[in-house]
Image 1 (spheres, rainbow, N blue to C red):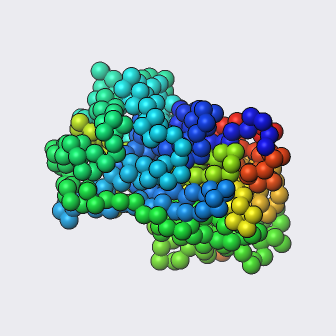
Image 2 (cartoon, rainbow, N blue to C red):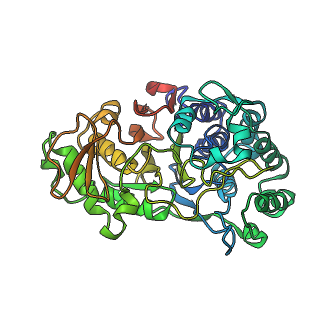
Length: 460
């Protein structure tokens, strides 16, 4: 194997990607890096991530030839009106790292705890999210003590965000264990603090909250399994149908480059059942915060892609006092943001070939399918594939298109212009991983403010 190749990482927030990269360089694997990224995102991107977010991960371990899905969906904390999704994320990520990781779990919380306790300059990603949509957070006094300065002005890019309550929660999980959040002193504090904020958590449900491991599902294409992680099962199922529509038995290969953006939008809209199209595709596709995805791959071909959501920017908008996270929404609005992580592996030969993430509102799925079509079927390099102009057919009869997207709108759809549709990161190893000759690429999207990093070898 090429000396010095460690793998690659991508996240919507730069600090999470940097910490994940450092884990790989220090000898950790993809599961370790993805775990560290999750907890750092809780501290650096509370608009879209956090201990209250729910979602799923897809893991392919090429050496063991295991392809699995880890699901931690939004499960009601009680039957009462104050129910919120149970915070199953920490337990799920612990399960991911325990099953596939190499480091001691507590090591991977250190940086997130430090960032929360001593502060971290707000990144452009978080600053943009706060400018775009504060959700309900700007009306919550507890939240504003974290997100605003002493004069009550919202923090901006480069200003320090300090989260003492979150740091204390991370410290407790690091020293006592994640289980304490579900059946220990931290659990008791969570139930009481949630009640103070107007939420109702049944302690029995909290104790029983478990993620679920299943065999990875997806589509078969070119002898590879393409499996997508998304915050909700309805979204991952829709992503698989969309990929099948684009890469299955259709006439897209015969479509001209000029007509391809509109043809892809049409294929996507037809892949989503009419009864759920507004839910999956949205009535519009603004670049809204509230969901995020990240990925990590290592030199041995272990690949992890995760996607989580709060339902809207900052979830419920009420920070749980003394605990330090925003709960997500149980009932998600029609225009709730989406995020996706795609893992592509060949189980016949035991190799990982590609990963991709997509986020940035309801247009994320269209962005993902457009990039993968350009790269996989049109054989464009990774960078040019991400730059291909995008369209998005909404569930409200509109064809949204970026300025350079061409082709006539499909019948029944009316044109509307959008500056940008979705954000995508794409990693590709052309010969697969593991492999002695490393030929890998990783690129991020000019439409976003995240960070992608590929370490060593011929790839970077």
